[in-house]
Image (cartoon, rainbow, N blue to C red; front, side, top):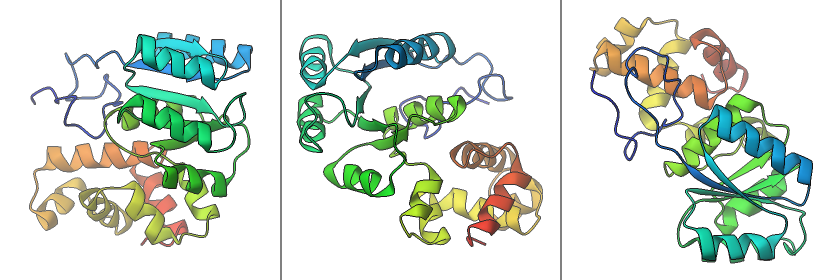
Amino acid sequence: MNAPNPTLTRTAGADLSEPGWAGWVAPRLKVLIADDHDLFREVLRSFLETEADCAVELAGDLAGALAMIANCGPFEVVLLDFSMPGMNGYDGLERAIAAAGGRPVALMSGTINSEVAERALAVGAAGFLPKTLPARSLVNSIRFMAAGERYVPLDLTRAAGTDGTGAFEKLLTNREQQVLRGLCQGHSNKEIARDLQLSEPTVKLHVKALCRKLDARNRTQAAMCAKQAGFC
């Protein structure tokens, strides 16, 4: 299989040890972390640099973030703490989005709040990241946003009152939804490929992509998650 084009793939954060990704090296992402908690900033930078091969810059408030964007940008992804000095609610987010010139800007918060997440997306944020997000999900969320995706944990879309079907429709592509319905019916990759007129390797890639988006360890867990949410 040819190595995926990082400018086109929707799952640039794929596990490079998986079959089909051998020999492909993910592009190094330039990320800005703006947060007023020194320890959190340093731990997050260390993790992203060692585990996700990101080039990370830091800022401690909105003014510092805007200066970094102007002087050291562009960044593939900018992460802003919702409550750091200078943010002034969503005004700081809007200013950072304008300064980033179309590059993804996401909001982070130690408080998991679906209303904040929805408002941030309405303002134009590329995503909302709770600081309690698991490490694997954090890396994938940054990769997704850098590739043009919007990221909000599925649990938050449910908490916001969105039904299971609506939440999955926002999170997954149409093709991924079709493949997931096949998984819910207990179909094998071969059967799903036949029903959707796709190749088995293509179905396998869709399964891996939707598992990452749902934070599911395997196809069985993905199907269980979809059934519990009322998607299928």
